[in-house]
Structures are given as structure tokens and as C-alpha cells.
Image (cartoon, rainbow, N blue to C red; front, side):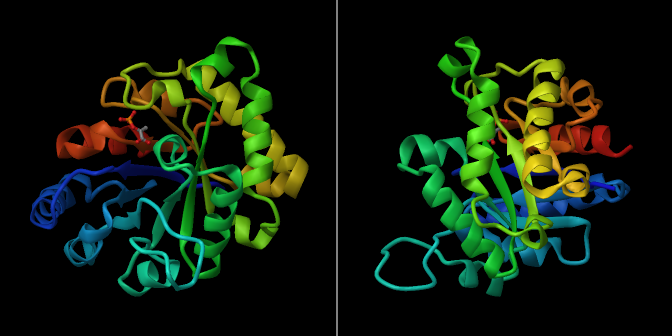
Length: 252
Ligand code: PEP
């Protein structure tokens, strides 16, 4: 049976000392959450502190991006091996802010996914349509194509370490949320593509999250949907009380 995963994406927020304080505060608040996995994806410089603070708890730590080359002249970039060695378990790949502001394409998202998986990291692969695509009625085609391109040449075995985060771009950081029905339908489209590519078992077992202004007030309704196996949460993951309410809503 697929796991529900609640993951925070801190984006460019929190210093190492703030990270330590946050995690120490969060640990007792989520200690009884055992029916879903809790992940915090944090800025690179916070990872080591986060891993140390989260040791022995049910909170897992992830990065927000990874480069696809093993090493070399790529100033400012971080490799999968570097992340792995400091204790990182998960990594977000293909977030819409990376696609929008840093020129990421489905091709580089695919390369990053492969590099992360080869290093033994679990990948949270983000994809989703922009507002114009939703309004033109082509959401299903867009997410189906992204799913295929982003997973190109990834084996069924490797797919076991991939979570897909369906994140409609128009809902990220905007306060606009997909309705539970829209989230369910589009996560279902992605699951059908996985079925086409990898078969029924893989489709039933893959975790597909919804992300886009999920918060303490709307999480329950979204998470109740059949095809929504958790959430990728930006803004609301920066407050321990809000993030706890969301984790508890998923703990069923
Ligand atoms: C995100 O960063 O992936 C996200 C969904 O952000 P927010 O929850 O703030 O919309």
C-alpha cells in the first residue's frame, strides 16, 4: 500500500539556528504521527543541522534541488553524493520556481532525478500546469507529457523511490488552491500515466502528493481524496503549529 507523505518545502527561508529551533519544537508536536511520513526539505546550508536535530525522531530531511553532474566546474551547484553524505534522504526536483526562475526544463529535471536516484536519494518530483493551460482545458495533456518526459529512462525499480508532487503553478504561493476534485482528478491522470508506463502495481503504489497553498484549513478535504497521497507544503510548513495540523490530518 502506498505511503502518505507530508513534506515541507522551506524555499529560501530559515537560517541554521532557526532550523534547529524549529525542529526541536516540532518533534514533540508530531511524535504520534505514524501513519504518514513527515519530511522537511530545507536550504542546503540547513541540511546538516536539520539532520542532527531530527535524529531519532520521525522527521526526515530533504534538499530542495540537486545538480545532475557528479562533480566538476559547476560553480554554486550541489551534487547528489554531497547531499547523501551529510544524511539527506529526500530531494525535491523540478519545483515550478526552479522551472520558472532558473530555466529548468523537463530534460534537466529528468537528469536531476536520475542523478539523485543513482546516489540513493528519494525524489519528490514536481510537475503541474500553469494558469493558461488550466483555462485552455489542456491540464491533463500537460501533466501527462511532463510525467513521461521527467521519468524518461527511469526503471520500475527506481520508481519505487520517486514521489510525484502535482503542483498547479497557479496555486503555489498564491493562496489559490485547487479544489479537492481538481486535485483528485489530476493526480488520477498522473496515476493513469504511471499505469501506462509501469503497470498497475506501480500505479497503485506510487505516492502522488498535491501541492499549492495547502494549509491547516484545507488539508483535510484535499487529503481525503482517493488519489491524493499527501502534500508538498510551502508557506504553511514554516510554522510548527500549521504544519502539525496538516500532518495530523494525513495521519489516518
Ligand atoms: C511549494 O512550495 O511547493 C508550495 C506548494 O508552496 P505553497 O504551499 O506556499 O503554495
